[in-house]
Image (cartoon, rainbow, N blue to C red; front, side, top):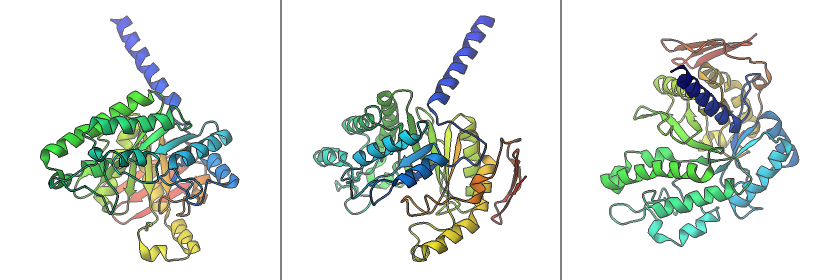
Length: 375
């Protein structure tokens, strides 16, 4: 029996070690920051690339990155990834490839266009568009999934990136789709999404990162880490903004980050400075004013992140997904010594506290107040 237990513990240790091998190297020395954006006026300049690679080792490159210099997103991301990894060999560069929406800036879109039998349709036979001209993938069709996973394999296993960002899981699983597709089709697509993740893992192998979006806590539904099988990274995308502004939603997001992190997952926690790219009034303000608002608003979302962060948790703070939307802004808090957490998050009503080696964190989710006392 002792020998059997020793073998089990050894195997568990090996699996954990293997998982850590292909994760980005993690450190509590300072606030762990990740990047996620696309640049729409060519690839990053040398200085921009140096900025990113010297401050993080984890980045997702978005759709339309490199346009208009590059017609296809695949080509731009491949070249950008090689440049970033040359500057920082430990950099993990993630290829954005939407799991549900047919964006036309991908070369793969041209293949999809030639297969109308793959296009998702509603109960009435009409095409199911997210908005004008943006078709959706019918994930219940094995041929669609085979094509999709082949694209992923080509860009990651045969390319220069380290993993894939599978977006729109929450759109796929939205119960409102039952009215569009019918119950049976809805069920088939939910199973198709699970099959897509499994088939992606089979084609990518065990040493590539699968990132998905994500965890979202709202009044209507609380979505946790619902796809733990075969995935490595889960994103919390709307903390403190959009439909996730209530104290209940924020607490659930933080607790879900803690739970997913303790299970061994990487968690990307995206926070907002009180406005987003879709807010016309805020976006009409001069860039320097947006900078000022973001600088003055960072304490609360950062403290909320630190309250629940685990090893392999990363913080993102800006107002959109294009580089010019604050994605290269840097804040004094990011350069302060942090150190390892000395305890788990303590919850007292709507007040959260936690201690790090070099910081004391206090958050009030009811009043949106926070303090970080840097020792």
